[in-house]
Image (cartoon, rainbow, N blue to C red; front, side, top):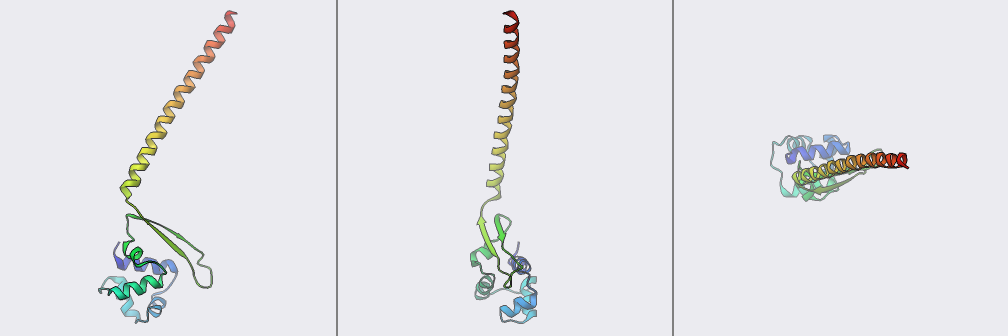
Length: 134
């Protein structure tokens, strides 16, 4: 996801129009629209201002991509549209490996449970036969 797409995502999540965002940044709507369309380079100072407007760290705004997990919480029905963004950088491959490992463990537990159930049936049959012999 390009920085322009991330900025647009955050703006729409906040429920702000391009007009509102441009006003918060003290710039023309056409200039802000160019940022979202990726038609202009964004100076570092403007990136910091955008991150501050979203109430998030610049590194989170820049680092927000498909390899990150993020949790969005908050009540957008409040008078100030407050919300919280928590960004947890991680590698998707790490989670995929952990997921596969857990599936393997579950599969092994299922096999063990089936074996124990069969042993239980066999032992009940032995007990039944022993009772008949008495």
